[in-house]
Amino acid sequence: MKITILSLAEGLIDLLNRLGGRANRGWRLLVLGSLEMVLGSRHPLLAGSLVRLAEDHIGDEKYVLAETLLKRVVRIQKSHFPEDHPRVADSLSRLAGLYTRVGYFRNAEPLYFQALKIRAKVFGLEHRKVADILGDLGALYKARGEYKEAESFYHKCRNMREKILGADHADVTATLDAMAQLYYDKGEFDQAAHLFQRILKIQERTLGRNDPALSKSLNNLAVVYVAQEDYARAEPLYIRAGKICERAWGPGHPDVVKTLNNLATLYKTMGETGKAGPVVDKVQEIQKKSLSAVAR
Image (cartoon, rainbow, N blue to C red; front, side, top):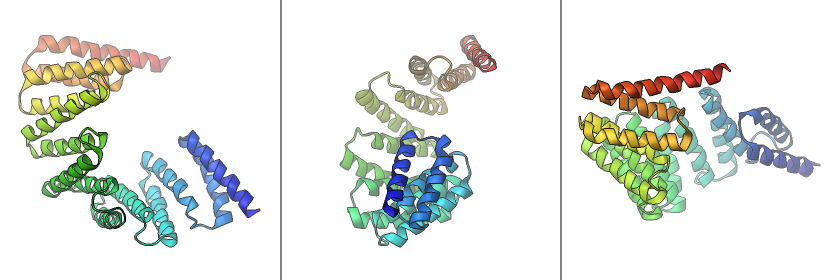
């Protein structure tokens, strides 16, 4: 009977995971309750569903509930696996990510280093999962305003990812983007612009010149040029980003509005009120249509 109930619960969890979404949270809780009755509260099969519930809570900004669940996952993994098992490292890293998100940096830092130590021991010093933790530590130190440490970890992460995954991999561009944002925050605009330019070249080569992913990079590079007061180079980037977004998602998409607002602000900064006016009018027209659609 125990095996039959367990098999049923596993099947339900698999179905709910395939469906996804917060609408299934109640069902997931029901299945978890059934599993706990059969297996006890610390069975490793519970961990995956607890993590997904925690992710739902994070999405709802219910961080205390998420922390409780993620701490429970850590306890479950530690009770069933050795201290240096990859699943323990994953659970520690996940909890550290939550702490970083809410600004509990002192709580996050030792958890990341514990996870890093485990992954380096299990997978070796040059592994994708090791690189992930290095990037997480870079983000932690950046959020804490410790830019020298952040830069060091981002460099290590980028070098490792380039070696393992290749220079054009999406994980590499994500690291380059994080580094560029760091340089922008430090006021090192030339460095930031160089990295954003590199990201654009990679994305154009791997995704094509009109992929929606380029719009973010175009906007980011334009922002750097604006900070450098190089308005002539910023303008065509905003225009191109807006066209890509509109082609991909339609004229009413929030990213289209955001890019148009950036362009209008640029024109005002340049004193080009004649150019700013039509852009502002277009934004207002989009917003009116959006409000009319909601009111119907």
